[in-house]
Length: 194
Image (cartoon, rainbow, N blue to C red; front, side, top):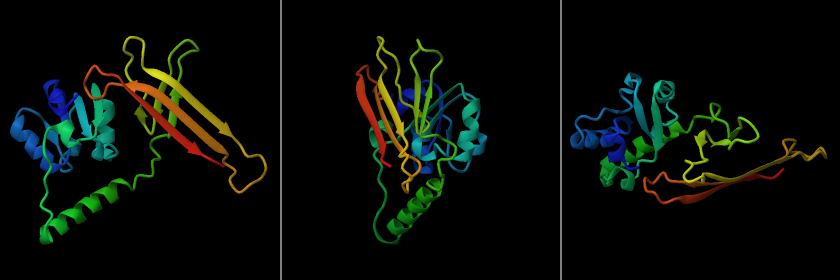
């Protein structure tokens, strides 16, 4: 789905102030929240720019939503061309503000999300798979969704400097997040050697 599709379905939007202004111009009935008003997010459907996905106000509003989605607000997704003045003192200030915002958001040590979660109701069900807090098993279309998940943990057992052992993760699934009926096969690999 694209931004316009989410707006048509009644989603409230959380994004940057510049993009919020453009969205409000084109979709005056859409509710758009920026960093200045995140504590006022109402109950309903919420679309969050990935940039704000770990913001404490957004995380506290998540359980109150009937539907919740996180997207990367690229030019293709939003339909807007992002142009910033990058000359002289103005460009330098804009870059400093962007760097500061990114630094503040990356201070999250990830303690509120696990690297890998697998939920299995019983031995006959398809597992729900979450990687870095995001569900990755995709929608089941014609019986296709999660293709394969492999997890292997092995301790060194020899008293080496790395007592945590090794972790190998491989997740293969089909995704339709681009809004089309085309299935996109995705693979996530994560390996940590002892």
